[in-house]
Length: 264
Length: 288
Image 1 (cartoon, rainbow over the protein chains, first blue to last red):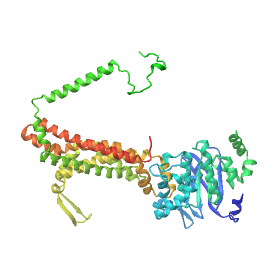
Image 2: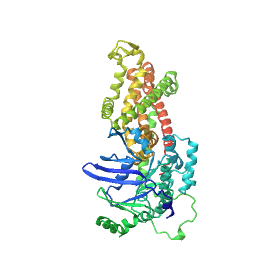
Image 3: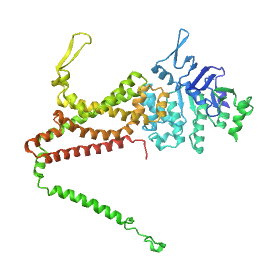
Image 4: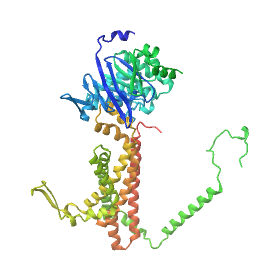
């Protein structure tokens, strides 16, 4: 693919997870995950439900607080301040500031139902980044064009199909000009015939060099678009590598079992 | 009763709406209801003890209209206090701060638990407890403002306070219910966009909660309006106090109660219409 040629050859870490652990009650969902995501890389997280994929994603933007370990975004620990070799919890306002740099797309879209499509997109840049509204509106129109919904700016989310809503959600996240985009099963709540339009937008986004972490069950998408695929099971990354290897010739039995199960 | 119709029997032109078959039960029920209503109206219309002249004369009498205005203003002030304070109490109740949670819980427990009539009497007789109200710098004798309690907390102020603080306890639970009704994904989406929790609350969660909050709030407003008649026990100068003052002189109790009822119904009707339009405005983006 030509897209890969355009990417910088020098690998530079954008996100680094080091020994990340997370429990909900007695259940340990993440059991010490180490992971590095390079700038411009598309990483797909696959694995059975309950394996910790979504939790891992939500730890990156601090929607979940890690119990142990650190998540770094460009060498800054997320949600913590390094002080004399120790980490201290950040004030909520500062965590919010870090989240501006990370876009997120949810399985259930989570568009704001009381706002039009355009208002949904404009809201955060204007209220959070305090950018001038005229400028943001223009950018929002451009983004809507990019996701193929330029004529839907004045619609309310309830008037759109699931696929259209998810494309708006992607535009909304992009309006903050994030360094990193997180996708949490973005097509799992969609009717089958609507999956393609969302994946197309994500493909286009990957081509622009956006760093993306995608939790997905769409193996075709993962094979075509991902630079690397990580297979997770039981709170750990069992296997990580290029798509051809992980999907075509996995080295772990658990990966093979999972791939067989979903191909049935 | 029904018979099979062949196509040629079915009239193609529809001059009137097809009608439902009527059963004798429907007729009998309607007849009984009509008879009861007619009897009630007749008993009132032909009642020699009811002087309609007194009603019409007092309907727009000065004291009645002043009382009406007082009732209306007290209800509005009480509702505004209830809404603002209630929202704050709801947010405190839902905060992660244990002290705020406890204070909010205690507030709701107390102001919802003590009867409104008792609360109004307490506010109306506050002067018995504190002869003067003063604002001073804590732990010093320096007094910034000082005033006679009965001058500050007049019957009307006492009524507004009593109604508002009582209302806030109920509104707190209604607002909390409204916030809980908003999908958690909304808060998460706002958070993920870098919003602080207060911005997310103001811009994303509360506007959506409002849709759920408005209908019960309309109920609360109406019951507050009617409950405001309780302030007649502290001579609050409200509508009921006004008509009672008149009937105390002319002994036309029923006529003047009719006058009061008329105006209460008028305000409630106006409020209901207002609520309808408010709900329509808030349903933007929602289809049913």
